Length: 317
Image (cartoon, rainbow, N blue to C red; front, top):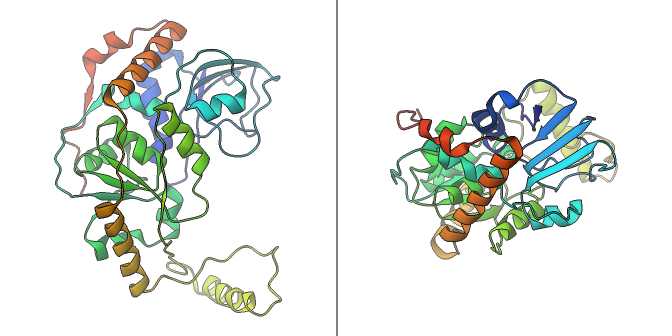
């Protein structure tokens, strides 16, 4: 049974949880047999899933592209991210509805340090497109990079009293560790559906607070690309810009704009609601997921938890 998940070129902690967590839980049951795919954490249930004879779905969700063809191969649903994914996939069985990231604290225990009043977590695409390091510096708050390895990310997450996050798995991991979180959205590509899918799995209704995006523009680009981008930007206002051209990002955000966005984040963190799921419900849902995994794969997670990984000495530079 081969683990299937999305691998971002520079890493993305929400996706990278798969290669960190599932081998610890499933051990030798995972191999390179791609005739049987284990579809793990992430918004993976779409038409891009590779062809296989058998599929085991373990807390994945719907949200991008077309739904997979359930008539191809044998499908076994051990868990889904939330009720909206269950409805879309038309799964009738009574399966756990919870993101697999809630199992992480069972295997990775980190002390809460609370060195920072709050931290900000951009979406992995936003950290590439924007100048969020500059925003955090202007606002004097902690920036958590979603490209960090799992251990480092959790250490830094738990150094914050609370987090404002555009990355959904930033919120999920914060929730799993009991850190209050506030959802935000700076870019149109942030997928509201998957946020609501996950939130409803724990009986929450969430609102994503809108802030302004930031842009790196031509930073780090070769001179030729900068010239092409400037020509395209000029043509956008001339009426002869072609929709078939590769889109060009806006110009690099100004210092005044960066300051404005930092002030938006500060205002939201000071005045708008933070969320945390109900402790009892979260534990019940996690225990149910563990029970289903144990029965499906004939393993004892309780026995495994005698050797929990500790990341107490893994600190960010």
